[in-house]
Picture 1 (cartoon, rainbow over the protein chains, first blue to last red):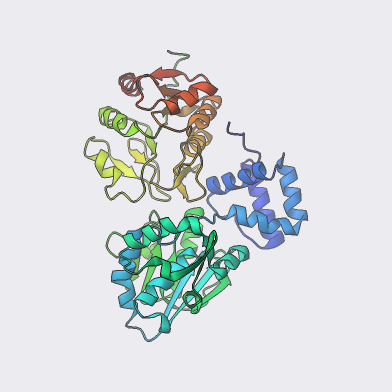
Picture 2 (picture 1 turned 90 degrees about the vertical axis):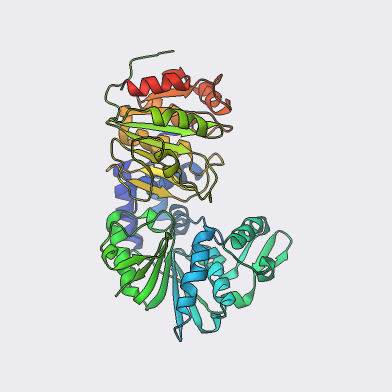
Length: 274
Length: 192
């Protein structure tokens, strides 16, 4: 059975306003349908019987806030997801980055880090890692702790190895991690050039200039107005001729960037043309 | 079987299908008449990473424009949309699409239940939903939810469905407006 929503449209609006003003986490411009679903899901999982109960818990128990943020923001990710995307990165984009004396990459919304290790592997294989730095950011400090450790369930490795091979990866994927019982730990050298840090795309500013900004399956949770704002943030964070990479069903089509960015192949990678 | 008259002002036809539904959709979609004035939205479980575009596959067989949804696309009446593989699809009040890459539901992404509920929340009694063949129980609860919200519901006749699990799961938990074979489904859609 699908339960009737515990949190309705007006409740949602009230709650998001309050969370923004009390805690500074602003979800008011998130896509309404998805955030409403996430919040109603929290009510079911944590057994809040009414909106009042949920609201009281969030506003009066600060320790619950991190759980709320973790559940509201989606943290599902995988290594080398969409192999053709990584193939294009590997064959078309990374070699281009190599001409710079210093390479700066920003992975925005890196979640538990699977993409970070994927990109780090590509940079190592291209022998560019020594002059590269990856800024890996997320709104949620808890997932960044996981990302820093680089420890993942061994059960995922079959899929990740397949993805890696399908992206034209030629090494033995298992050389990148050591296995221990039911988990693997990705090798230390893969995170040597990575800086993990919290960054909120809604409220924080640009903090550097990059040649490549990767932000995949994050913008789908934002409404069009917030998407636009974040596109401008990315634009301001990209060097001219830099690249912006999005998730496979995301697009800059509805934004101003559409005029000054050129799409690479059929992948969701755009080059800033000025 | 006909429980009550269909709402004449259908604004969305949402179809959920899994194993054994692809062939049925190849029968149904090309026969939908060209000048429909409602949105057609299909949630079909299928393999991620397939190279052929589902929009091209079906687009070649019908004169109705067929799209695979991208994030924030508007659902325009007269068009057929497919939920993209490996994303849940939700509908906003302004009838744009929000994609979602959260946990699978009923072992499925896209989950039919999620889109059925979302369609019902937006289009309410102007929703017509069809649940086709499949080997799991996704869609049953969503279809019931649509029915409770006064939408119109159709379950593919389990005797005809290649895999009857999905239609049967729905019939276990509520009584839809119609149980039909694909030919009657086409007839009903074209009578709207």
